[in-house]
Length: 342
Image 1 (cartoon, rainbow, N blue to C red):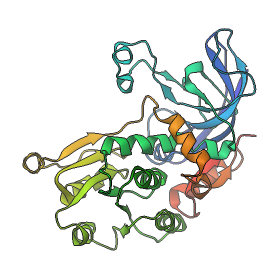
Image 2 (image 1 turned 180 degrees about the vertical axis):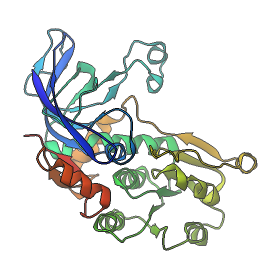
Image 3 (image 1 turned 120 degrees about the horizontal axis):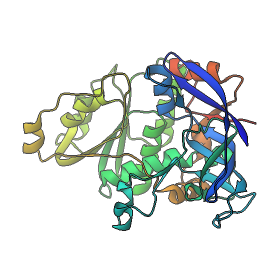
Image 4 (image 1 turned 90 degrees about the vertical axis):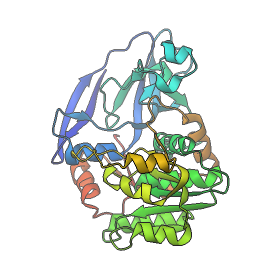
């Protein structure tokens, strides 16, 4: 089986390749029906100067072939695809710490922005009752759920979310579901169609405070409402924003980091003394291997998370460069784009 797929790197360079896929006894061949655009994909296209990167990992599709040992799916099943799945056999998996697995089943370098992907049968989750476009929101929602779980937001507690990209917005939705009493979110400005659309969605999701950090001082605005600081900060924005988290967190609060950067600015100053004396807990959320896919799908299917609010635009091979370029410059009111190969 051959598949047409997209690879990318810095300066919005796109390369279309034809890959040969060979099925093994434990593999599943999935016809891609929809693949969401992740912020990581956009980071690669803006900042990543090394080798070509496979684009797309937020995949929903259909099982069209399976290996002779595969029993968990059948041909014609609609599935979401985990980009990284626990192996189940390493010492960490067998010790009850699947989140530490380093022997994961991956996408094997095959882009989700393509016609087909070939994965281990453990990477797929069967779903029903959803369109593929909505189902492919499962992966980013699972990322948000993992971040909210790691943050351990108290029932009725307060949380500020840094960044109003799709992960930040999904994190806000997940925090509301978890029972946060106050959810604030930041965005840099509302000067582009994209930034305006995202901040408007933050309000629609019920965020109690929306701070445009280029126009308003985040620290003073937060301290007006919480003089002693907020219970939790979840940072989905680039690392440069992290120092402000230490200025608004309460004594003994938790800061959860998941925002990345490939532009050479991932190192930040940190006053360790202040963090220690303030008993600030710093943790990270990195959703590999994938966890929370079943819960994420359930929340989308039930309508607790309305996928239609997030997935605003679609594109395919022919208009990929133009569409992804407009994602990067903010000239379209995109919340989340979805690649449709067929």
